[in-house]
Image 1 (tube, one colour):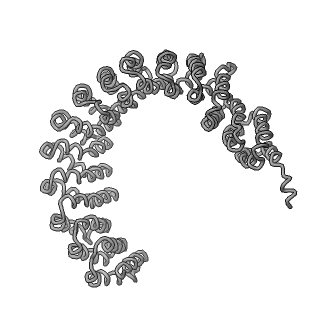
Image 2: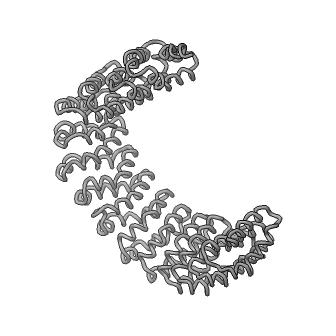
Image 3: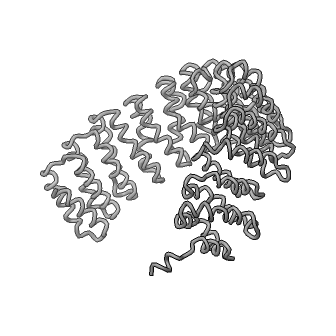
Length: 592
């Protein structure tokens, strides 16, 4: 039996498979090429398999099969593990595939070339650079030059000074080419290429082509790419050099006729500020930024407003003085913007801005706007401003807020949109800590407890989750004497069973501040009562809550045997199978 198996010709088998007319079989054979290489061994893979693969991707009929060529482009990188270090043999076939008309084939060939060179960087000077120059100088079709652009940053990292000069020259030539697709590809790789260059080389050879492309008149994608390149260049240059070479490019981009270019500046404005530094930002970029906030395109205005929050996190940027002088004057118009998304973005940043400005300025210049946005017709706007209500309240303090925002907050907990009601509920613990016990009881307690009866489960769940924070803030005595009776009062047979289930979910949350004796006295009787509820959901929820209490509180054997265990024993034979299951689990805890 060993003879026929040993004589099996793996290479011929592979050749037959890839000639199969069935595409699935053919591509499957290519994707399993590593198995053929492993069976052949490194020597035969190098001497027989690789030459055949190099030949087959260039000959009819497979050279016209795009799916086959794409799979082959991927597998050449995989073969790197099976050729015993002869990775230079992979570069020639990948060069051929990098010149194909189909984009996905070229991109896959480039990815494979990158993997090969990153594994063996020493191949770059003698093998990758000549390949790159051949691709960059092919004039019969643009595809080879597009691939050359993609390889330039990788090659530049691994070659000597003389070769670097040649690569910079090649990049400049590609950037100035007549073919729009090549210029676009070069522009998209400019950021990566500049990152691996020295500052002096940038100023000597590349800054002129950067300026040229940033004024490209036919393709806005090139000008967008130049904005991204500016982020890299600005970090490499000092303030004086930036004044000379890059600041004007950003000013031009802000005034660009294409909204995509202006949008790119708006989205990356925080990174531009960081790259240019606080001094240059204050002197040169604040006016362009105001233009973006007034832009005709609503998407640009929205992103310009949203980026304020990241800018506030930068050290020494967007100081309170700059905010008051440049940013706040725009808010009145933005607060009345016709676009819902712009007002929603404004509502999202007002909390952090208020924190940066402090109480006096917020109360004087932002309070009216905040109140108006809380009453806005669009629910997204209301939701965003409510999500920062706690932060705004902390800035203003209880005295500055009681008569201005609190009434609005009270109304929003009855909003038609459940997400807004949920957001208000999430803010209540923060507000309760700020206001203190007395103001919470008079202004917020009733509306918060009403959320436990909300028609939407997520609102009830949020109220349940956050009630423990309130109990912790005001202490065990207040919880037992004031809060718990009101929660027990909500447990009523006359209302929907969902409210009774919610009450059972709330009890573990408030018990976190109670002693075992208090749990036995105030909570256990209600749980025992719930085990006798007419609705099965309430009964098994009571069993689960009893289990939780036994796991987290030492209830004592006397309380368990007196009231809890008899109630659970009754449920062992309940008509509902789920109730039986949870009752039995709870009994196991009793007996443990």
